[in-house]
Image 1 (cartoon, rainbow, N blue to C red):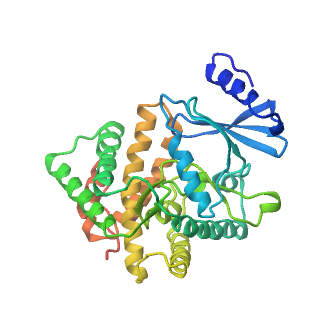
Image 2 (cartoon, rainbow, N blue to C red):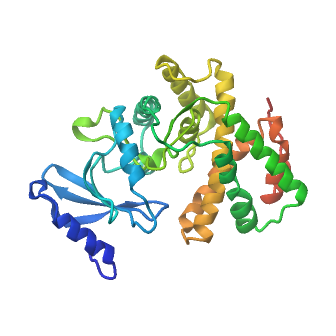
Image 3 (spheres, rainbow, N blue to C red):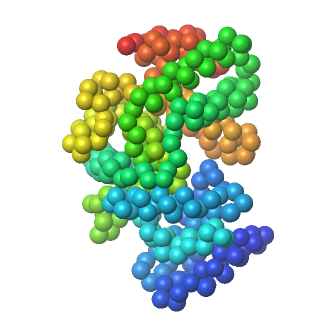
Length: 346
């Protein structure tokens, strides 16, 4: 892998070369592993104990201290997260254990039978319960004000920039009312450690001797203390993978049963729990439409456009079920240039 016109790669190589010899790092094997929607990127290299992961998080754009803190919280709770073998937060470099070659998303895209799929996701549900049992010590709170601030991305980037629609004052007010309703609903929930993106791209398929064990959990540095339904909504209404409602319900029921057995504070009435996580998904997916539009138009990352129809479908699934979101449905029909639709309501 060449480092031409990449001074950070040169600095990363120099840092790796300075690490203890007993790690037996094969620097010549350094190769790209993945990148994400932020400025972080990841490399894989061979070492004495197998492959390891190297994180490059430019300090001008990324603060790696939250990653270290949350990794400690999750590891203390028994969650399968990467161990930090070495770090230089001043440069934004970390050396981590490797939890696997494939994410759930990559395995699904490559082709997976239902037996393996269900096995992976049921173990992911167990890991979610374990993660939510970890103490959210010194984490910022995902409160109503923050949720509403995130929702502002939807009218600005998806409606205005991506769809080039100018909303009327009445429509802006209707959206504001919807956002208030979602925020109030979320604040009635119990607070736990929230990953924020607990879905297929951030779950690693276990391999080798650990193949029957828990999936690896990555990309947790944005964790907050927030509503207990947030991460199950992320998982069953995955922005990268389409799950139909029967599958959503199957995994949600299994999670709800496991969470109750573990003493987590989920609602004792499944119908109320179902409503709460669907409303939570609506907040999340409206925000994601704004985020994906921004990634495309501001950052030139057009690959996120492919996921917008799926996210929009999740938004409509919830908006069309509940009478409270009638104004939102009408706005969506205008924004997406669709005829007004009807559906079952509760």
